[in-house]
Image (cartoon, rainbow, N blue to C red; front, top):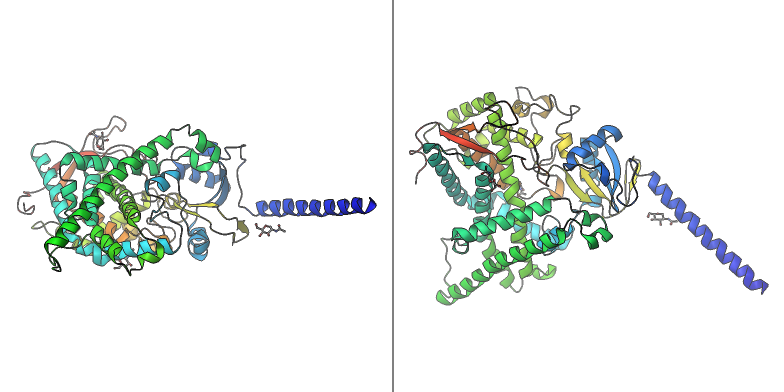
Length: 530
Ligand SMILES: *[C@@H]1O[C@H](CO)[C@@H](O)[C@H](O)[C@H]1NC(C)=O
Ligand SMILES: *[C@@H]1O[C@H](CO)[C@@H](O)[C@H](O)[C@H]1NC(C)=O
Ligand SMILES: *[C@@H]1O[C@H](CO)[C@@H](O)[C@H](O)[C@H]1NC(C)=O
């Protein structure tokens, strides 16, 4: 009896000690998180967030400093608002913060196989390599050059017709349409026009892509708490499911038709290769799947992954690129002196005997500076978002596994500590010899941590080369050929200015559609060949 009592006592003491140690260990770790506002039960810090999260985070950084922690629902987060800390997290500790946070919407709609959001590992490395090599490297981007040139001309011709008939253009509709067509043809070939040929089907496709991009951009409370996921009071679950079904139907159709065509073609010209045709991305992926010895076997790459990649690249590329062009043009309309200087550069380098082409981009430093300045004020990725895959000590803090990291690019880009006259649109800051000082040599490739429009490191946006080909040259062509007259706005008492408000979303879209009257600057018939 006595022995049992002693045993019980000893066991009790040991478990109590363990318990105390765990509690202490826990508080110890909590003490090593960055400063944090007072949290409410259950929702944590959600009550502190407005619809534009990067702005709410900026306001909190004014109170709590360049690094602070939050709890959103049950998800621990840290928010970083300085270039030095950005470098610390994204470069020094890159491998601890290598994964992207994923939402329910992204998992469902991209078949849980997204390039942007897959965990860092063999599968991700494989699809990244394939996508970059076959679609987005400078070599591949050049290979698909004529697709883009045709689409630019088509769009400028539309503007030209509108100019003649004095009708306005809804750029918030036409620019995404152009990007959609370009990425669609690069991935799916001129052939995609066979499936998407009738405009009805093409329009449907555009709407699905748009809805998916919108869902990805919205904050879904279900992502932050398992109980909320069951309740789903925002009705996200149904929207996600609907969009997934529509998107899958579209992509399945495209892949399926292509497979049939390949079988037919194989029978028709056994052995003969069609050398003329540039192979599009889908062909390359299907070739790969047929190759029994390929590397794809090792990572289990399958037909579903092909559909996932197509879905993923459509949603990742269309809006971001179009929004960048919209912001750039809107800034130019609001800054006539900058616009005039840009035109002088175009006139002296390109002249008005031909259209600005993508290959002119590197020779137009002022246009490049305008695009960078646009990215500084309106970064396509307003916050670099990652999730920690292991416990990590950064400076004096210990960040536990599965903490979300936000690097607030948007706020850093507007911080007077790092930028002179941060709220001015002043492209000269990026030019050498003129005003820039320490900011003059900065590029967009993620090496300068006060300026990360495409993110940084291994997870940098792989579309960077395509975007940096498209955005400067098309914006330049638009101002080369046209003056842009603004439809007077009710809110601003000035007829020549466009509103610059932002709308909530992953990609900081414009709150107001950009609708303008193009006015031809010269006779465009010569340079817009049919
Ligand atoms: C304290 O927490 C750390 C981090 O989670 C863990 O690795 C360690 O084993 C814990 N120590 C004890 C004594 O529980
Ligand atoms: C973009 O192009 C540069 C220079 O041609 C190349 O070094 C880089 O790897 C490319 N980046 C991507 C993501 O394709
Ligand atoms: C412009 O296009 C967008 C996107 O298609 C549409 O939502 C909006 O209603 C259009 N605006 C006008 C003024 O036509």
